[in-house]
Length: 257
Ligand SMILES: NC(=O)c1ccc[n+]([C@@H]2O[C@H](COP(=O)([O-])OP(=O)(O)OC[C@H]3O[C@@H](n4cnc5c(N)ncnc54)[C@H](O)[C@@H]3O)[C@@H](O)[C@H]2O)c1
Image (cartoon, rainbow, N blue to C red; front, side, top):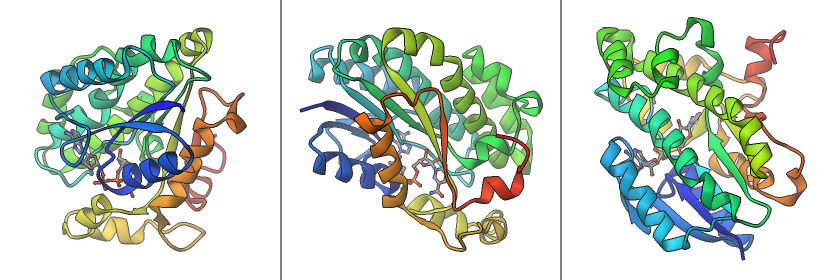
């Protein structure tokens, strides 16, 4: 039975993925702020260290899978929290758990990024260099100085850097025998999306963000792609980003892929 860690397991895409992985025979170690095996706040360095130490203790230093779903929406105040959870809450777990994954059987990891990862391209992303350098306080300062634009900058900037961080790790993780991919959901019916819709600063933009498949995804539709990427059917898929977005990326960026 594969032992798999999943963050953000208490809600939305993480909860749907946890249910799917359990049903397909994974033994899960769940990490979240609530309703999880390991209660840890991934917005702080101390919380991330706690999560890593407790995961490694529970799995005895050997893991077969890792799914990183924990994340915050653009509406969260302060916007600096979005940077910390969405970028550092994922990248520090990736790096900290690679040695354990290397000891696993057919090991694989999936990181939940977003279609927003393409909305602020790397060369125009004002927090990209800080994030890649691990400069959390400097990246936080940039988004806090952006005022009303801070939420969008924090969300799109951290998701852009997160997808890049995964792609930058493709060579080393491939050599280590651990597959690593991202999924990029479009609008998905979860509490995160509902919180954005209830915020007057973001509700119009979310309502207008309509895909060719003219509805929002169900969390289970994102989970099924994560499940595929974690399984043997994806044994040669590595360093890729899978859009689960009803076609919206193709409409916005037909010449870029
Ligand atoms: N819902 C969408 O439309 C959408 C679109 C694209 C990408 N995403 C991404 O999908 C992922 C899951 O989002 P969701 O929509 O299921 O949201 P959600 O709010 O339903 O679930 C997010 C989970 O992350 C956990 N979390 C948040 N902050 C945390 C912290 N500091 N420490 C530990 N856990 C924390 C929450 O407790 C929650 O259980 C996120 O990374 C999000 O950015 C969502």
